[in-house]
Length: 279
Image 1 (cartoon, rainbow, N blue to C red):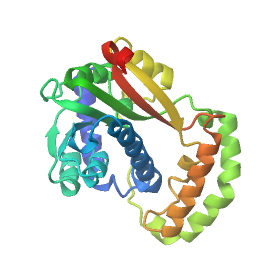
Image 2: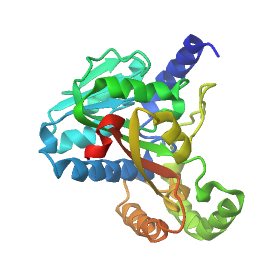
Image 3: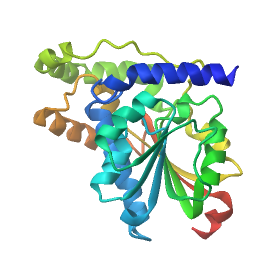
Image 4: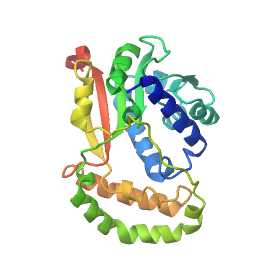
């Protein structure tokens, strides 16, 4: 498959989506916002055990409109960099994290200095890449000694995505979803009419496949989250205090079943292979 064509395709799609990305419930919304916040809190606690996390140098590969960078900015981080293929995404990111260094480029070429970051973040970007292993090659080059890579991704083999589970979850969550849809009916009618499109290399991975992509470069520690919450992605309204409370209850249910069933989202902590035995 022609890599230039795929990059052009992805750039066009993301530029088209950029103005709506944060406000469209399929890509932004309460579920994804909370997932990103919890993901950053998790990596923050992991980092802060060993150093002052606010003083580290961060880079978000595939930063989109800057959601992860904005969370880090609120925590007082001053060394923030974002890389994204689409200028439209970076235009939106500059509105939310004006002090971050935002650079246009692909993960494959990554016009960034080698060894210049303590922490790399990748949030919902791996599945967009034509050459997913290149992400780990690039990450290895960009990380300073002792640095870490954190990934937030979808789990293509989650128990929650199997046909029987989808049927059970659809039935189990239907009453609550219908109530929320009725409550938020006015706001939901105002959602932007955006076509959901993907580039021709788009695909989700499972935890084993991500491990294989990182083989020889990184050692990964992984966990899955979000068994119930994604089913409410398009009915919870971010501006509603009631909906935020409802989501916290749903996330408690998610936590209760984490040890029994895999969720929709994978959290990965990656340390360079040569350093993994010392961590």
